[in-house]
Length: 441
Image (tube, rainbow, N blue to C red; front, side, top):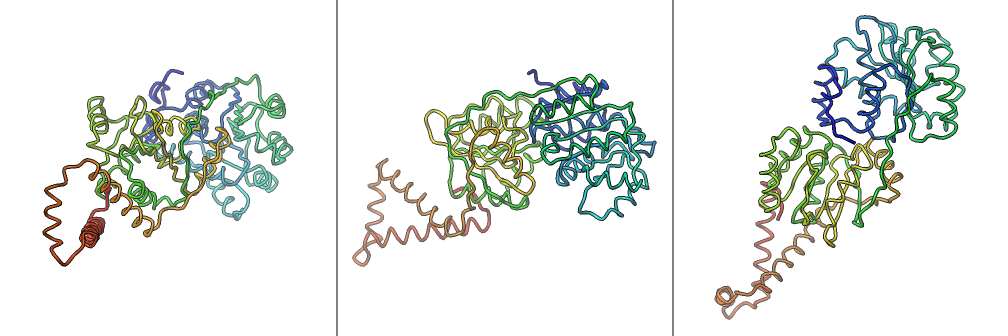
């Protein structure tokens, strides 16, 4: 499908500004297809997997049609779980940050209902709710849905699996008859189609069908780390594996610049590559990467298109990608020309469900591994030195240096003792360098 931009979709400036802040470079396929359909006022059934950008796919047109000056619930999003309700609420708030006066409230069980009631009384424009808690509010008459203009069923297949069909039917009886309905589901089962037929009027079908995912035969691992520790873990893995070239993927342009800057501060030869750079600048960065003047490239998915460098030893997913196909495209940058490759993914908190979705959809298993400890790094450093020593011996031309070593040996020391002393000196120098400016050795 042809690549378009958010500007091509005629997204209003306040939303476009928020999208730029979030660092997204272009719409995902489901966003490109769904936004125009929803904006035109059609009921819609969208098939898209978790992590494909479907929240913005319905969130952008939903926010466009709000009237911020009218303090009434104008949009309702139903979610199967409190976690998804919170996640959708957070994303809509980020998108609406420059719209002025837009109020978004997640409504779910496990939180004191009085707190939700207090916010509802002040006036809310968008309610994101789990079915059970919303029915509780309706029975208490603490929420008024009479002015809802658009209703979204998010992850409808999950809601049916969890037994919410009856609750959904009850909620729909409390909604105005004249409204727009949007349904998203990862699958198009008979039950989902029946649900759509029951509640939607002449819906448009929008599907993002992934091509066959060809999974490269490379070593794939994930590391469960806190968000604040990702750069430290990346540094440790770079030191441990010492790849000739490494590619680090981030989901946004802002993140790319942040990670590249932090790596540079730690002494690594790292550079950014993203869509805000002009073509000449991108070409200069790629030229330095190919010539190994730069050995770590931090990039977004869009900017990395067209990278064809065979010697990339490791691909790092600093952020779990938004789409399963992005994961396959990313890791396919390593393990080329018959060489072995590695793909390491950092997972923190809510990103775990994205990783599960990738494994499920691509029919692969990504093994969990521990981050190398200090002792592991120390041992690995000696291994790297040993490899360099063997390479230098194989290259020859050691005669002038042998004479120098013989002078040091004299009559009191063996060649083994001199070699051990030199290794100790080298190890101490490496430790001192790491204390001041950690980097690749």
